[in-house]
Image 1 (cartoon, rainbow, N blue to C red):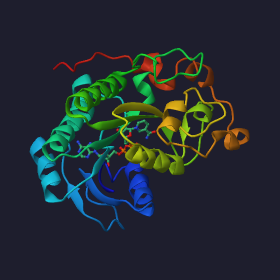
Image 2: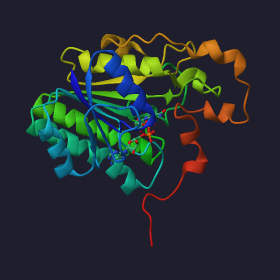
Image 3: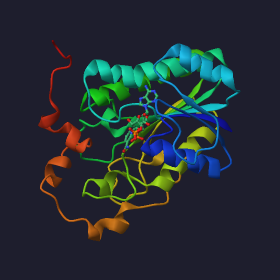
Length: 265
Ligand SMILES: NC(=O)c1ccc[n+]([C@@H]2O[C@H](COP(=O)([O-])OP(=O)(O)OC[C@H]3O[C@@H](n4cnc5c(N)ncnc54)[C@H](O)[C@@H]3O)[C@@H](O)[C@H]2O)c1
């Protein structure tokens, strides 16, 4: 499949770009920053929140799908968050409708449900429960994807990623880790799942101590192979372990993230 990967210069973007190419996809990269060394495909250095720039990217070559990773992957003011997550996605969705592209895979986050107290395995039926403005941005973006899936019969898969890392480094990661290889498997499956409409999956590896249910992902063809448990013996207990395990969003659900929604001069 010929796929536009936004945020292709980022930490997930670089891994996904190479992984999709290895799996036979053709990748067109988009990022605010230039292509990383070694990338030798088509690259667009653009702001994904600019609808004219995005439309021109779609007009520049035929595409069959979009993997949307471009955004600020951390807490910020509410307005910056909405710009970074919702507006970038809106620009892509409008261009997809204009150019009749039917499939988008979105890097959502566990923080869309992060303020959910950690008790039972959380399924994709759980109501949105963001822990931060970042989480609100992901919830709002998922709602936008749902709207476009319904209105325009698009396929839109929101992958609520846990902790994308080479390996887990904290106790929380034993539940939330997403390995590099499983991330590529997740995106590839989300690009290939037959007619899912709007769907949500949890983007974690097959972790023995998982807090999120993988069934929705498996139904879409995502079969993770790695397990953070392999690293458990090497991870010492930390001072924040207990607090980080109270809510599924971990540190983002803590008091230190509380701040006003809008910056005032
Ligand atoms: N890393 C994680 O564990 C994790 C967990 C959950 C969700 N996510 C989501 O995955 C996505 C990618 O995260 P990451 O960790 O690779 O972040 P990153 O910061 O490493 O990469 C993001 C990339 O997007 C680019 N970018 C940002 N805004 C842009 C814009 N408006 N136009 C064009 N390019 C833009 C940046 O230049 C950067 O190269 C984000 O949406 C993030 O919220 C990441």
